[in-house]
Length: 186
Image (cartoon, rainbow, N blue to C red; front, side, top):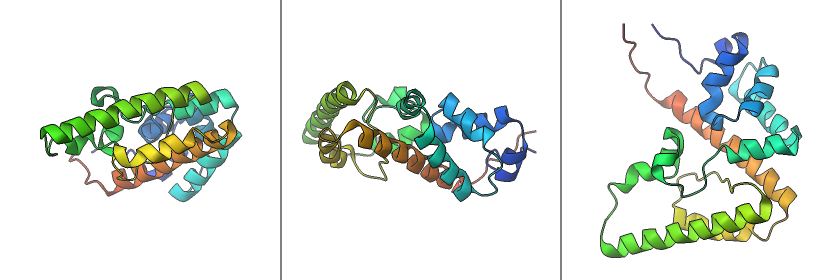
């Protein structure tokens, strides 16, 4: 019988390596952040863990903050290059059902091109990736927000991106907790 990898009591009490490995999908694997989070245990509850995660993320040296943000794929990254959770969040799991008419394809190409342009401009300006909690919005809906971010100052953008990383992790943990458990194979 396999144990729930997200049973917080066990994660709080277990080895740091197990904690880090099991929480890696929530944070796209950012190793130095996960080590800091593991060192801050025990949490006792998911809200306490995420409160601590937010505090830790904002208090880390900038190089580690950038590593945490850059662990997430760029918005609109090729589907084959993203994690399973990011694949779902960026809407790639529903594209197959989308209308493939030429007008829809042209719009997808336009949005992809604009995302490429904005990602490059953002990373050039700030030195880290644009990271946002998608929350079910389409890529085209995110374009104005991403374009507006280019006018922000670097410090506020880094703070916003760190908060987005934690918000994404909260959403991922909720989704994983709500997903039916797979039967053990034995």
